[in-house]
Length: 243
View 1 (spheres, rainbow, N blue to C red):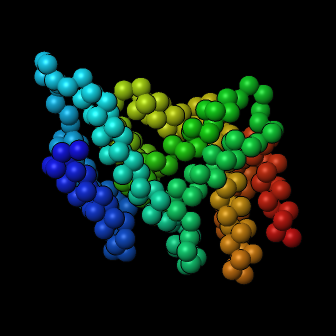
View 2 (view 1 turned 45 degrees about the vertical axis):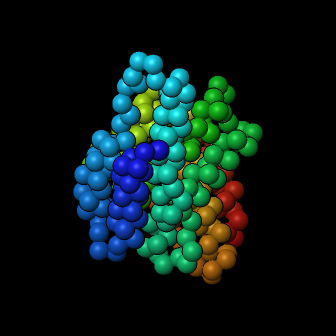
């Protein structure tokens, strides 16, 4: 990775870290703060076309550089705490990456997926569905951001991340999976949306038991919203363990 490229990505991640940590910045202001920095990083990280007679290993090196740039930005998912737990004052709350990982495991181990569901696609969708939060943070209903505006910000962030990855089939698949989930467009998306809710209430149950808290509002926020039999069955099992 060239010096200027590394510097631009480093600056981007530093800006993301500072914005996410600041209690004074709303998700709206975080997004406004990061957008120009990200655009600058995209510009400086664009690889020039290989010159005739150049090293044949250059495309592979460029691909590796784009992948590491992308993964470095994804590091923010490991350090961005889930906002609902932060707002409730839960100590040491899970990160966005923690949440997505367990959703992926849910899709991997579920023995009762609906007929015809593509398990591998569910696993992939689970680890992609919140990926834009590496830039915009975890925007929750309590932030008062309209659903359409939240989707617009996340779509813009996703486009930047796919550009950082260098485009191509991998970026296209990430975008397609994210849009499928966002639009609740397939049975796979409905399953993964249910796992999103199940993972949240399971985490709420764990915090209740570990910390002696009452997190009833998280259970109430998902009541009646499960779309699949597997989601309903798993949610009922979690609820039964509160008794």
